[in-house]
Image (cartoon, rainbow, N blue to C red; front, side, top):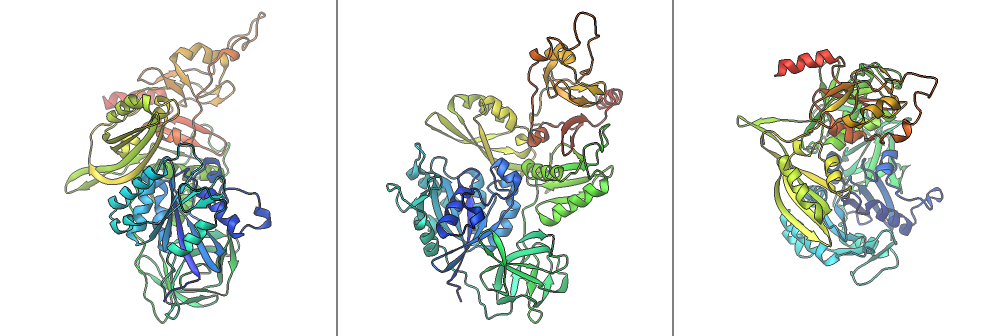
Length: 603
């Protein structure tokens, strides 16, 4: 039995292909904006970190009404590191809106989400966005989409997939590439015509699987999922079957549906629609809620394993406890356990020295967790991200990724040489309009720390995207960071006089006035060894001039790095001190003599 007045659509797009802007247009066309939202943009990017970075981090649900049909929109992250959410939320959809850039075409991370969608039998609707670009090449992009469909085993779909051409920036959609539209109405009409209505039976005993979790300060944990069968009523008793098979009884105390970006109270939600429910203790992702008289749980949600692990430790530097609110190992551990509960793509296990080992899909995945914690007032330290090694059939294996770099054509040779040293195997190369696209397979280790050098090699124009490609034989040694670091020998305030005298040693991360401590990394050495120096040394005052005269103005600008850049820069013997106000690189052992003894033992 179908639910003709419902459509469930997952929106799939690579980072910066215009997905969020397209959804803004759909909201305006359908009249789903509240008065307070008029004139707003990027409505789906409600998180502050999302708006800053311009990427979707958290999967979200929204809904619009078009020609009497309730259309549930399911947002999906565009980055492969956040793919753990994709695998869950696609279970709520019946079709996918595949958004591709009219110039760039489908990217590796688009492939990741689309592969998951085809595995669940979802119907695609291709939207070629950014048709307003002067370099748009819609026909060639459609050919690339066709090739991708065939490569993913969707030959039947590739023969005749529906296409809409659009410009989210200008607010129009059209059925042909030659015609410029005037509104988004054609796209909404095609959603109703192409995306199938859910075929679920409302007369059967109720059943719903939790695909996403949320939190509300008033009602606690909220489970979000599509009603698989029956009608879910507020106040009804259910049996909750966890992923491990454990059963417990509960009652639906609160029930909601989506209207726009908001959750609105509902007395019932029918089969095929997406519901939000509260009141079940210890509700977890993948849990199935069933009628007590017909307990037939759905298959547990299976997620791909993490590939990167990072150590989280309480802060023990000389500046510990100064800038953070939550600083104890217990507080940090509780926050990490809560993160793993909300995101099962994370794995948390005990580490050494009151720390935790947290595994995720990539540096971005763990970096977002770290950034969110510091914004919430947590203070802690993290170690270098490391790949998770497996032993398969008695052989050591490591994770690999398929990657693509878009770059200026004249920098191609330097970039190929750089990634070849990191274990890359070049598979394809494209050239067009002074730009080039390089495709290769590389150990995940080879991508850690690659983004900053890539930007230097390509004058800031290189864009790297990658996709997990399973495990394969251990590659051996992979080229990493070549330069040593400059380490502070004293605690105190950085002076311009000291930096000016030491400029020939390398590039500094600190500037005059910054506070440093012994063992803190203050810069990068020009050579491949670590050296210790005093950056807080002051010029002795005389009756002729002050200690800072004619110095500060001539000092080179310090290199400033963001969180992910620091994580990729870390060496094995270093930690990153993370506080709400600061990021400080330091040696694990602050005392120079201890570091020298360790080095002598290693040799």
